[in-house]
Length: 271
Image (cartoon, one colour):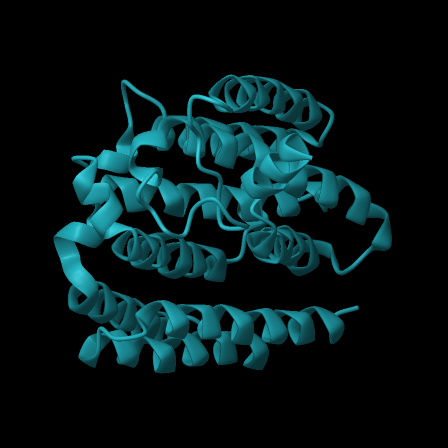
């Protein structure tokens, strides 16, 4: 039971809907919806989460010991008791994801391997981009953008078929979204001697940067009404951390729940 619970924690179930949505968005914006691709997307999503997050949790084991978010559905705490299990889970799941990627269309294969490479550079030494401010968030921009590209490839598309909006979403949610998450973990990261974008920019800097990017995206890019609404919702929520520190985690969770509901609506009207 401990092993199964640990596997669930490594997969981080609350984030599965977001990854699956990114894949579906890439597919739908390229060719429209099809139920036939769902099994491949679910397999890539679950295996991808296990591969990327087991690697991340393994190399974050020092800071996660004092991170109150970990040891739950938001990530595992790796210690002497389960370190070997997580290590081999990371190795096996990454190899399995590479094998899965090789059976996908060429553009999906390339994009999936880029996602894996970026996540490895982010988490693992000697590169460990997680400890390099700004670069840590840029690597997450790459991960989100090429996850979208996997969906595009599954629809038979190539790089030329990737909509410009994918770049803005990757920049906003992969970039400043990562900064916001690293700000929440700032105390645990600081105790472990790490310096991240969240620590460098602080909550006001992250909020201002996110707001600026959203405004630029709304001004310079045409959006569907539903996609525009997600950006506006995020913009509204971003004003809270600009002025208040209290309950910032609860506000982030409320934003995540709101976006999850809206993502369901976004998908429903495209079925």
